[in-house]
Length: 288
Length: 265
Image (tube, rainbow over all chains, first blue to last red; front, side):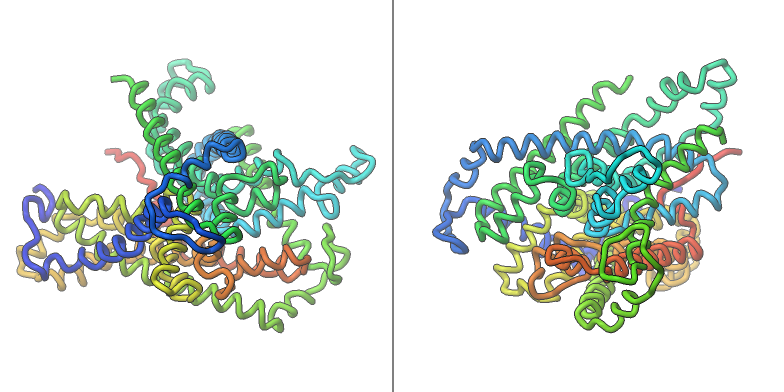
């Protein structure tokens, strides 16, 4: 039997009613806001807090200034690096967890979900404490005799990278988990039996089988970290501030909604382009 | 498992626990200072949280927003997921993608969209705006969970019920609802906990008037440190752990997360 409803079509208002309400909500509160944002990005700013309807490209033209190009390139580089670190850490972790007994797996996943739901504020706060001079890990090194006096490791680029990797790690694990569990343990076992070293089995059996989940994980983690607003402020120096901070700053503190909207539209296009590009690359390399 | 595997799991656990341990330790300091390890063990700041009306107000805001927005998110996701499962019409598929989109885009973009929208509508700064924005932002979670849940229903049982003359509401009550209940609860729980901890959307939409806990923590970090923020962090982590442990207790957490073992005869 092919599933219920196959070939059937909903008829009349009554049968369409269940889809009309969610459709109205999604269109009214998500598509319409995006439409507003797109429209505003072409408006002309008069003075702080005010703008008038127009169709100008001034807001987009401002991207050509070195500040924005630098911020954009830095944001992309930072988040790509964070995504790579994060997925590289998450893959062996997820593989190891998937081999545990069921109960232990559940306990790990509850823990991962609890860490996932940690607010960015709490993550930023605790890492800045942990990497700071006053109560940080360097005090431990002093006690152990490795250092003469406590040092501050945050704010700094590495602290920021670490924080972003921490932020996105549980997310990466959850993205990889379904695919890793579906890996057929017998195929891996078979490759071992046939004499493949663990590393060879990893390279020739596990990695190819996980190619697209890994790609998707990299992209989504990249986009996720690109949207981080608090961590660059809490763990980085001003030169490490990303596009997200620039957008929020323009919208809230400079009251320049048209420019913020143009930046957001641009960031969205960049994200989508990278997603499309990565998917296309992944497809081409896939053996037929 | 190999020794190397265990060692790696241990290292990851240490990495993930480190900030939690620091925050918990800092929250126990008797004085208003940022010391780790704490120079004593005291619950002064836990008591301070209960007495401080500003912190309690922020906590109340956060809980109300999370409760209402998670309910609204489920109320949007359930009929949509049901409709897609029941009718399988192609034109409705983009709605599913549309439901996932707010969560998959960089949050700052979605947040700015909401900001612009609520200013135009005239509700910027109201709690209603935060609730609706969070509901739309997190609708992806119950939507993804529920569509997994609907896929897990045995269609032959549904068909048998239909042949035996059950109408759509009866089928929903007796077959569909029991099957999707754990997914429904999980979807709600995810949306609830993530809403509690969300910063950027809440800040952009009503940050200066409706202070949620994450906003209050960040604000008080700017204007000087108080151990209450560490206390609040500890409370929130415990709350999140409790919610997910309950989900795991009453449902199949691994299945909810999409784990399906390869079928074997």
